[in-house]
Image 1: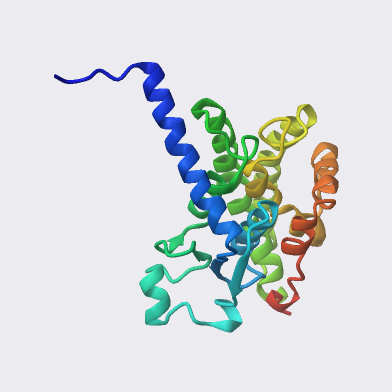
Image 2: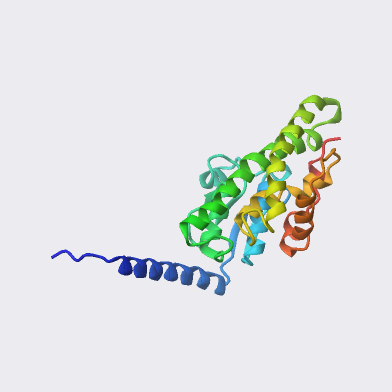
Length: 246
């Protein structure tokens, strides 16, 4: 006879499995098996990842790859990530993981607490939607069209009208974050979460480069709070002078 699994039993089995998974990863940390991270510290995507690693207090070994270090086109690297991009991680004896968002979700799921990445699907979705929004609307609209065109492009080749248009578009999106942060301590609510990683990692460069910024008091106050987080200072507030094209 087939046995029917009750809702209570399903709930019990789910949480037993979750506890066993958490115990496994806690054991990895306890045994000091470090994450392996491939990517240079001046990459904004690597900075987001390393900030996450710092907030979760995970042991790691990082290897400089990409930009002036090269190495992303080698057979060994392409075997890990066929796109030839950083970051890439390997956790203990697991398979390589690439794409920053996927890596951060993986680490959040394995090592994050209930505020950072909740077990409850509805709460997790609220954080995930703001993380995705920040990646697609803030990080992508800042890193290439603004930072890349101002810092990583020779002044003689800069297209000021295009940069100004990109800034206008960026600031329309940042107005959403401004309204959000005027009502909440962090991007997804009252607690620091994965969404803050995707939004906050661009703010150091945003406030550091020479641009005209609108008044964004809530975002500025939020940024000042991030600057008090040791992992943010160590992994995000990193000089980008080696990227500058005169």
